[in-house]
Length: 189
Ligand code: AIR
Image (cartoon, rainbow, N blue to C red; front, side, top):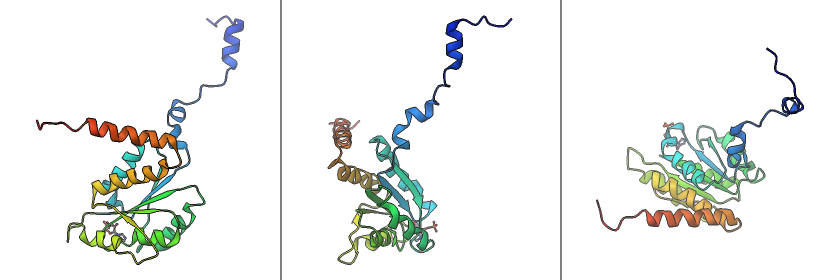
């Protein structure tokens, strides 16, 4: 039987459909990215996802992409060369082996570039860390630890840079540190 139309049901039937939940609750994701995470290969993602996860914990919008200094040099230059104009403030670059990626990024952008060396089969990541840390004077790359610790710390260092001009990020970083301190037990179990 058709529902009797009262003034209330007419009004509610004219109402615009409710906005999709997903687009409301993920406002930080749709915000313009402040950090660009790049890596030389899909095989680096297992390590580099820790950078993204850490930024997500701090609600810092970021973008993630794969560009190789050797396999996709033009695409890498396009990405890194345009990053500043697109509003990116810091670039995190992870690569392994002859890890030229952070240096190649730093060569075409004035943004701070943080390098994360991948752990490798030949020398445990020594090859990649040396490629990143041994930049010639004039084009700096801030090089972090090999592997997961480096990925996490690159995200935290990015947050520290952004916190200098963003009180929300400053507070998020303070909370992250305080939570971390509280989580360290006095006695081993
Ligand atoms: N790589 C990719 N292009 C240039 C370099 N140095 C690095 C990647 C990855 C390693 O080579 O960053 O850590 C191996 O890549 P793949 O794709 O062979 O697994």
